[in-house]
Amino acid sequence: MKKIIVSPSLLSADFNHLADDIEMINSSDADWFHLDIMDGVFVPNISFGLPIVKSVKKLAQKPLDVHLMIVQPERYIEAFAKAGADVLTVHYEACTHLHRTVQEIKAHGMKAGVSVNPHTSVKLLEDILPEIDLVLIMSVNPGFGGQSFIKNSLKKITELRNIANVVNPEVIIEVDGGVDTQNHREIIKAGANALVAGSAVFGAENPAEAISKLKTI
Image 1 (cartoon, rainbow, N blue to C red):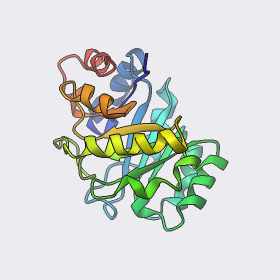
Image 2 (image 1 turned 30 degrees about the vertical axis):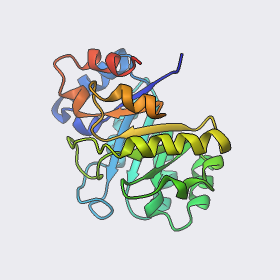
Image 3 (image 1 turned 90 degrees about the horizontal axis):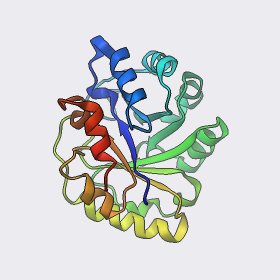
Image 4 (image 1 turned 45 degrees about the vertical axis):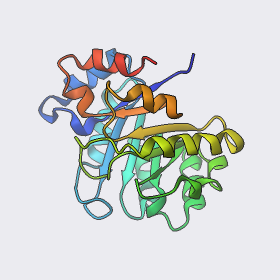
């Protein structure tokens, strides 16, 4: 059976009770912790930075899936490695020298991911696909939680999976934005095998149950 990775987004967690939410994820069926790093430049919002990643790492019993929505992400690769990132994803749109950035991420012992915004064609990833571990398809315009899933993303997921099957069948296709228990099956059917969910988890009456539902095909 196809293994589905669920990575709850801490952007939607209750920061007054962050330790409780981390413990909930630890004891749930979730696979990773998703941390969105926003700089207010690449995206129109500011989230959190290295101190929060370090704090989460102390309590987390599962890998940290860190998504850099920042300009010049190459400046912070070593810092996020030291902070505890296990997967580090940068944006195609933010990297002038993407191959070099990917190689540096791997040199610091992390899995390397590349993300694309809704307007960016997945065809542009064909050359870098053999070098990376993960592609993160943004199914909303990045910067804010709680947005609705962009339907055209399903076509992009399928297109990417078809390309990946030729050049890197093992690559993880992760989807972030508007993912919930109503649409997760069609996202998986399109070719994704990792789901980021914020509001759908932390806004649920039973977050752990919502995580389990997201893993069902």
